[in-house]
Image (cartoon, rainbow, N blue to C red):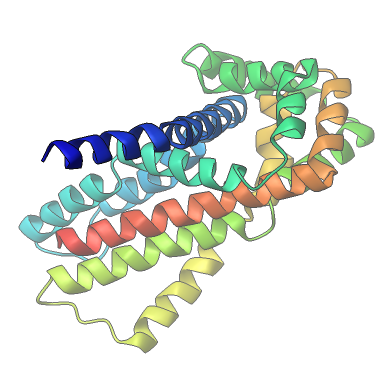
Length: 268
């Protein structure tokens, strides 16, 4: 027994440096993920889509019984719990960032232009930002953007939001909604053909997120921000590292929703 204890102790001590290194690397990945999430206000991105579905289905569009609809809403809110979503997203993004050049991402995070745009995003999503949004929209109605500013914001939107990225995330959640309702309700039995048709209709009704960002969101979010920091940030997003980071951000979002969809299926 004493020999066994000595052997176990030796093994633990022998692996200690590797464990410490692994924990350190993991901590670094999480810290980097936290910084990226904070700078880009990704919490709002992760939480917004499920919130939209809750708002829509509180209206009971499938005309379920009140009891069944309430049960479904509770299951959905539990599966897509905000805290759990962010835990999953942070973990998934951290793993993906481990494969990217962290030094270049850290350099971008430290740039004054990055911090200036992050401050604009933070103000936009704050309670005080609501009033600023109203002022910005009024000012933009009175004095439209110059062509150069429009082109800059258009290029920026295309760089940070890949075409179809948010649509695919929406489809993941929408499918989980249909399948869970089908499973929960005795009065609904979706066939594959019906699910495909509903999905096609859903695609047609969903907005063009990139165009929406170009025309409505970015002009308001970056109202009062000079073009220089936007141009500097655009250079990063158009670089190879920036493109890889964009892919990681939205691949992580889709994976996060897939995990939530699995939880919803288990809850029903």
